[in-house]
Length: 193
Image (cartoon, rainbow, N blue to C red; front, side, top):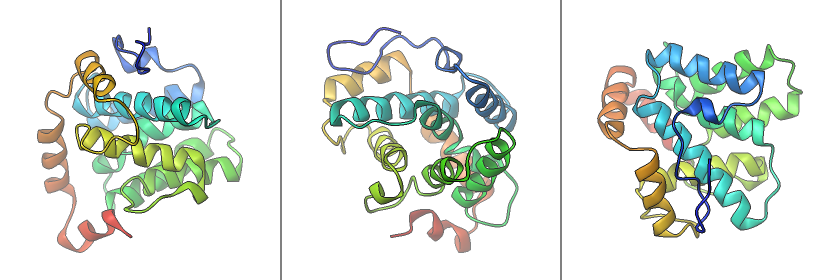
């Protein structure tokens, strides 16, 4: 991957290019298993979220746990594909706790990653939960708003990222997955203040 002057890498052939550790590989494999494909709209969205989170960290001078950020990015929407009785973000948190707990993560690190997944739609800052939690929240908001909300990321960087990791089919897939998964009684819990 090469980063343009703006920051985010523009050449990412697949999420496989990002993985470096067993936990990252396991997170990507679990996402692919749940979604049923590789390099699909949700996987590409996850890659864009990671790259934006990494860019936000660099721009803000925030030190962060890269492995935790990669795992949270891959798994933040995986709860859409888990059968459960709660909001998908809560079922996603449980997935993180199981998957990464099996890999010996410390309780504090596991809690930060789980919070990044469960709290990525929060309407208010999540810095107090950990830098990675807020970075995933901000990156997802930049991504789903197509740059209407930017947190300092230049529009050119967002355009380059979308060109390098296409958004094709993302909105359609999220709407389909939400309609298949969420009931009105759980939908409100996705956007907790």
